[in-house]
Length: 170
Image 1 (cartoon, rainbow, N blue to C red):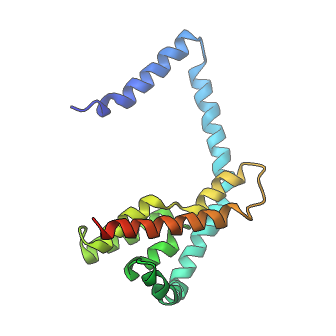
Image 2: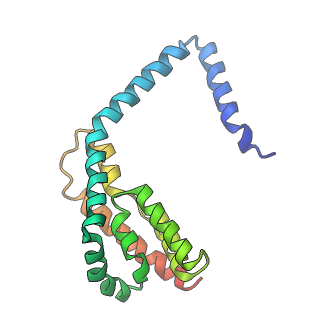
């Protein structure tokens, strides 16, 4: 057996022992934390819903296909396979949609080809930028995102270019 099988129970036991030693009301603290999480979910729900609707509309309307055909030659010049263009477009918006596209790439091309390796490394070098911005910035006083999002998108694209370049030599 691996130690990871026991890690969560050990952490829970250690927290319970700590709360007993410090004479903390463990259940009340847990409920207070859960209430805070519920308030967070309620406050960011409209933003996440808007992102999910936008992604679905992009795919259903054909806008994603138009953008893919427009950007594919540019990405090809940068060394990015055309087959991962849709993944690059959707990754900043949705994590689960990106993983579904990654799975489609694996099924279509196999897990060991250049396209799949490139897509896998690209997924680990990028983030769901708009989702993260929604979650974090909705709970802070930061409202001016004029530099944060474009810089994050540039870094994501740069990471994608490097990922594909590294995969070419692997």
